[in-house]
Length: 153
Image 1 (cartoon, rainbow, N blue to C red):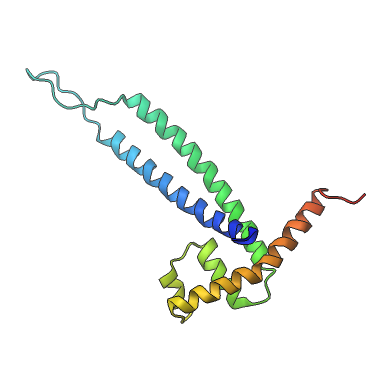
Image 2 (cartoon, helix red, strand yellow):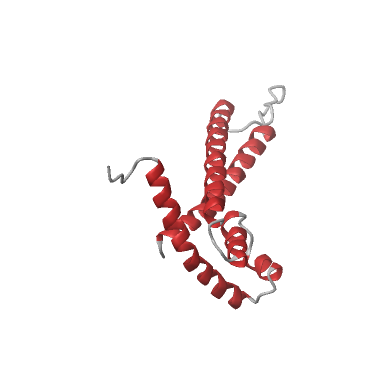
């Protein structure tokens, strides 16, 4: 796998990581909402949760901050990827890579949208990634020059 494909995969993987954190966040919120009060009027105490509520709230607060930071990173990474993809000449290849890596669409959905079989789609994706490589290199080189890195002066 080349650097360009690794970059595109990082966009897709960041999206997956974010979905997992969102699920954990939902689970923690549900746990907090489902904590029941302890009924001390009974001879046998029932209800409540062994985990401390303040501990769960602190975990949820940290998770929310992490998710917010990850959303910012994902949005920035998606925008950067879209900018690089705009450098590609072939519109169909650009659309395929955008759908798969930036919009996180499934293979079957992309194949149906592009009227391709799964095997055709994988071949086209491989060709598109190879066509994207020079765009990735050019973008990185231009960005480095703008930041003053690798300057020849």
